[in-house]
Image 1 (cartoon, rainbow, N blue to C red):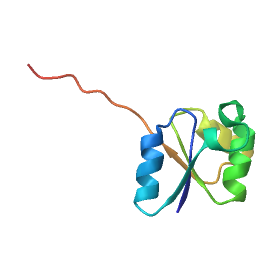
Image 2: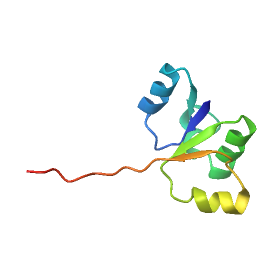
Image 3: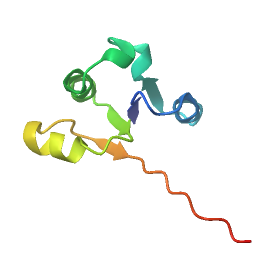
Image 4: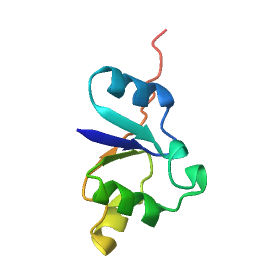
Amino acid sequence: MNFICDVHISYKLKNFLNNEGYTAIHINEILEGSDTNDIAICSYADAYDYIRITKDFDFLDFYHVRKSPKKVVKLTLVIFPQKN
């Protein structure tokens, strides 16, 4: 599997995926880096069969309008309160 990590995804995840035998790149390393727009990222991911990893909420809507990206992993951070 091939992964492309969005701008707000840690390089630690990219490195972890590479160490586990997957191919992972970070958007900051390709195209226009952090200035790359969503359409270009999705086009790149679809053209090279990458699964986009993102924290952005708008990709479900983006997919319904453009049918791209074909594959997305949406990460959500949940913080649980500590018990005293």
